Length: 212
Image (cartoon, rainbow, N blue to C red; front, side, top):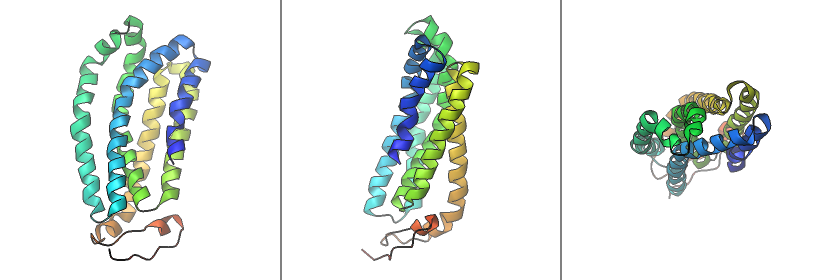
C-alpha cells in the first residue's frame, strides 16, 4: 500500500529529466517540494486516524469527519498563500522558477483537496481491514499519475505532471466516494465497543467481532 502510494514521488523526477531536461527537473523539484506540504499534512492526519481507529474503531464516521475538518483548518491558509503569493515564492529561486513552476504549483494546490480525501479514505480502508481495496486505490492512482505524466510532459512541460496528479487524485476521490456510499450504513451502525472488520467487502471472510 505504502510503496504504491510513494512510487510516483520517485519516478516523476526521472520522467521529467528523460522527457524534458535536467533544468526542467530543477524547476519541477522546487515546485514539487512546495506542493508536497499538502501531502505531508494529509498523511500526518490520516496516520492519526489509522492509529486511533486501530485502537478502537467505534464512531469511525465521526473520526473521519474530524480528520477532514482538521485538514480544512490546516490546509486552507497554505492554499490561499500559494494562490496569492505562489509566483512570488517561486521567484525567490529565480525568474525562471516562477515562469516554469507557477502553473504546476496551482495544479498541485487544487489537487490537495482530492489528495487529502484519498489519504483519509485509505486509512479508513486499513482500519476496516480492507487492505485489498486500499492497495488497489493507491496503485490505481499511482498508475494513472505516471502514465498521464509520461504522455503530457512533452506537451505541457512540467505542468503535465500537475495535470496527471490532479486527474489521478480526482479519480481516486470519486472511487472513494462511490465506495463510501456503499459501506456508510454498515459503518454508521457500528457500536463504539465492537471492532469492525469489513474485509468481506474485498472477498475476505468476516472475522468474528468481540466486545472489548
